[in-house]
Length: 351
Image 1 (tube, rainbow, N blue to C red):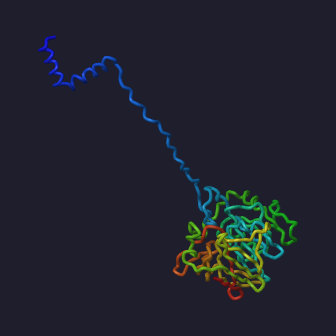
Image 2 (cartoon, rainbow, N blue to C red):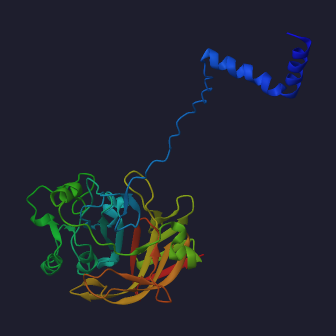
Image 3 (spheres, rainbow, N blue to C red):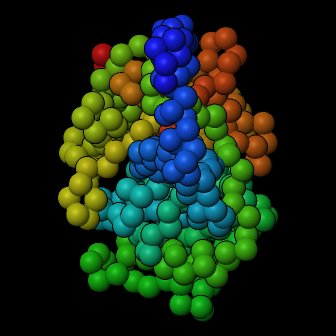
């Protein structure tokens, strides 16, 4: 190459150096036929939700508590339960949804006990029916057990349409006598068997209004702090309920002593309802008049609210309203009704 040509080439390199320098790299790449391989993206862990769909629930009709869906698809069982001192402690009274305590002859009390959210194997001691019991039991539309009674009261109970198991007439083996106590305070009902035999009977309608939580109950929201509820049915029958914050319930005593289960646990209630009632007497048998109205107090969560109760017909549930006519909301849980006679009975609330 001549010096002139060499100079020309050098000037070209200076002028277009970038192009000349890059071109061989492109040419080299093209010659090798190799395509750069992109680096792989790091593979992270697959995300999985930890959310578990809650099990379906429904509201138990006689407690207002949330229970497993389908678990309430059976009838209620009401039983006339003895409360004579010789009958205590009663079997499964601590597992009730509702208890109605009523005055009977001799100044003592008996219970109408109602189970639905859970049915025990046995309940008792079972005693005879009384004139107010059809009015108490009819709204539940389920099963009823009692030992017998005057024919007029048995007929009235049967007229409500409940399915009755009556000890005096039973030949199916639903009843037995316990050896733990003496007759007549020892008649025991095979409760679960009775319900199983009648499983197709519809469950009861919800009887009362319930808050979703204890804190939302009407007494808790609008009531006055009350620690002890003292009731007296007669000179020989005194009852008391003491609020226990740790148990979130009222603990029951009878005639000055703790009211206990056979296992030694004190009976308790989430709601205690005192109804002031008129009591009439026919042929020496007291009758609590329930198709009527009157004063009431409703206690939940350590507080008590004044109310009015009313019952329009035998098949209607007891209605509870506050001073403004607003329906009372109970706390979810079990409830004891104290049907305290006007005049001879008393109810005292202790802050």
